Amino acid sequence: MELPGEEGEGEGEGEQRPPAPSAAESYAAEALAADMDPWVVFDARKTPRAEFENWLETNWPSQVRRFGDPERDVGPVGWIAVYGPDYIHGEGDVAALQQDWERLQASGRPVTFDTVKELALNSGVLSGKWLIYLDSGFKVDHAWEGIARATLDGHIAVAKVSPRGPDSSDSRHVICVYNQTFTDQEEVVRLDAAIRATGIKCQLSYKPDVYTYLGIYRKNRWKLCPTIYESRFDLERVPRRSLITYKVTSTEVT
Image 1: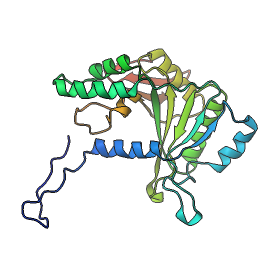
Image 2: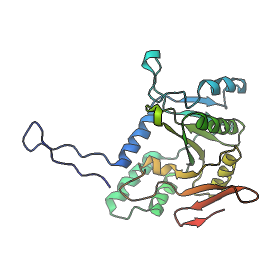
Image 3: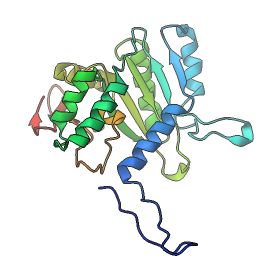
Image 4: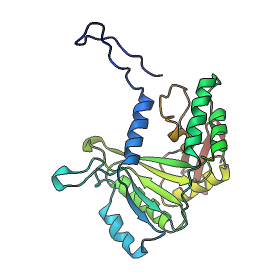
């Protein structure tokens, strides 16, 4: 829920503090700021493969600082990304999506997964991503190397990872691995398999990009869960594979 403004003692009588941003609004603002800051990108469509090893070694996520290093004249970095050789950028009509979103909220209709999905289909904003959260250091660097190489080899279309945060003692990273259509369940499952093939066994969550564009994050005012799939790797099954749950209906996919 959005937090209400509070009355407080100001310089003038009756002066009020501005409303505090909700948690979801804070998360959305942080994500937007990262998107707008410069990215470090290896684009396999136009960069020689021979340059990849040096690029990877130079840009480990645990070493690249989100807000730069003024002493070394290094600026902020929003994301570290790899574009695969067959990657085609397409995000749909985001402006139309956001206009429809405003109309939906003004209409009084319930904001549910189905109503947001309808907006996504109408605007063509259909991409989504598996999210992998890892501690800074060896864990994230090792996982990112596997994802980056799979992207370079064309098994994954595009992926990105967040750089190291300002608090080095408790820094977490997120790796985002994308597919084109969040409504295509088979495509979502295939992408999970491509991620697992790199050796990653931790829990994964899947988020449609329409939620990102509309600011639907944790603790949002509509009480929507910001992820629609969850993947847990089952080490006891033979052959080993993911157990994927579609959270919208609480049904097991695999």
